Length: 483
Ligand SMILES: *[C@@H]1O[C@H](CO)[C@@H](O)[C@H](O)[C@H]1NC(C)=O
Ligand SMILES: *[C@@H]1O[C@H](CO)[C@@H](O)[C@H](O)[C@H]1NC(C)=O
Ligand SMILES: *[C@@H]1O[C@H](CO)[C@@H](O)[C@H](O)[C@H]1NC(C)=O
Ligand SMILES: *[C@@H]1O[C@H](CO)[C@@H](O)[C@H](O)[C@H]1NC(C)=O
Ligand SMILES: *[C@@H]1O[C@H](CO)[C@@H](O)[C@H](O)[C@H]1NC(C)=O
Ligand SMILES: *[C@@H]1O[C@H](CO)[C@@H](O)[C@H](O)[C@H]1NC(C)=O
Ligand SMILES: *[C@@H]1O[C@H](CO)[C@@H](O)[C@H](O)[C@H]1NC(C)=O
Ligand SMILES: *[C@@H]1O[C@H](CO)[C@@H](O)[C@H](O)[C@H]1NC(C)=O
Image 1: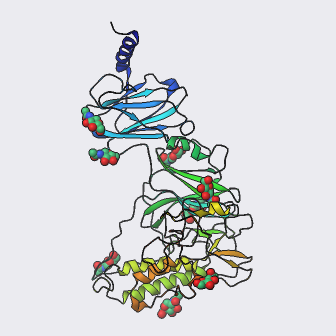
Image 2 (image 1 turned 60 degrees about the vertical axis):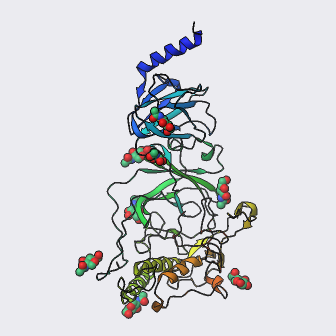
Image 3 (image 1 turned 30 degrees about the horizontal axis):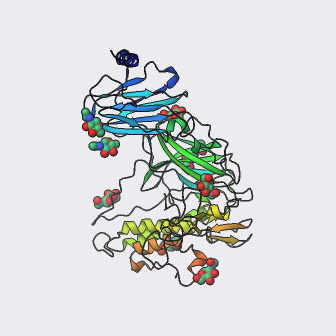
């Protein structure tokens, strides 16, 4: 005779088999362990099916509910007892993914724990439906109570460099390209890193994070083509607290999670306003030493930037492009690696970086130890303080077209790598040159942060990058250095 429990299990399996809900291909279900009509689900058949399970409630690691999947032809629920082609989906970080071949469909079973748990299950034949994105959101810059943030990129522009005999370089001008007609639906969620329940302590899933209240007010949300990585949603947030470390996530289409990144707001004394959305300098999105504009947003864009700053800059770009075009671009080569279009791009990045001086601030609350970082090569931790130069009230600006700023401020020096990149990319007849790192380059540039001086190994410098995901910004790369 069969033991009673086994009979019960068999009966349960038969009953459940009738009432199992089907997960349709390329869709997901939102469920709760308290209100399941059946604790197992039928999965569609596919040659490479990705099953994703996202936990939508509770703290990381708090769930005792387990998820089992089988791709065998069976009517028995998979479970902790195992069996042929029975797999557990590990939801340790809140998200679990299983990919495999499901020739005859399969079954996903929920082995309920003690808690009331909200969760989602998705099935898809083109990659997981619920997932964590590898690309992070991008921090532009902050003031005491505002921040400029960007979603991960999408829709990279098709860059087809011009070719001989019609090697026409576009003249950078005043018009921004028009945004794509459809875009992912990105939502931003930020909260103080030191909140009583930090976002990072929750299940790391899109459904969990997007259920949280976000700090600040979105003052403007627009699509912006920063660089060749593609379009991004650009947010200008207001109403943040000064001198606070924030955690930021971006949720794409309610199903995909990007982040976290961290950033800090400046002290109340910081009075440089932000600038963004400049078609001729699309990567420039940071605080500049210019009187706060009297516009609704108090953020500079191409409409409010004084023409005494933008006109000469556009003039330089045009004249440079004209001089560059005197070279037989695309027919003769000055380098096996670089083209005239590369030269134009790098020159533009460099020109924008030095034309828009950037304000910075040493992270005031961060202790020496939290500002230090572990070198990737395993060297002992080094202390990396941002490359700041103190400017007194009334000092002439580094860009003579900027009026002197009305208060003292800290200038965040441009990373010298932006200059080297233009130097490398451009033909020598243009006479472009960078200051000598052995002499006084460190007066006008941040030297040795990204690349080590006198080595050719890239990113071997003190920090290896202009900024990191933890809110440290060491030098001004003109936005050319997304993570
Ligand atoms: C089930 O998936 C596993 C892992 O992908 C695979 O090795 C196995 O062959 C699959 N079983 C069937 C019946 O397709
Ligand atoms: C199945 O899909 C996953 C997710 O897209 C992918 O990582 C994996 O390589 C695919 N497997 C096969 C055998 O194609
Ligand atoms: C040269 O290329 C530009 C930009 O791609 C295009 O607008 C122009 O019509 C082309 N001219 C000729 C003669 O093909
Ligand atoms: C985008 O997502 C948010 C939050 O999930 C939702 O409220 C909004 O309606 C969505 N917008 C569009 C255009 O789908
Ligand atoms: C948001 O910013 C974009 C780009 O600067 C601008 O075109 C748009 O008018 C702004 N929207 C609002 C409501 O200010
Ligand atoms: C661009 O070149 C023209 C003609 O050579 C010159 O008049 C003008 O001053 C130049 N513009 C800038 C910003 O250098
Ligand atoms: C620049 O470097 C020189 C020697 O390498 C050093 O003596 C000087 O203090 C540095 N100046 C600044 C502003 O860091
Ligand atoms: C912000 O908080 C995170 C998480 O605690 C930390 O790793 C990071 O160093 C902090 N950033 C700054 C600039 O203090």
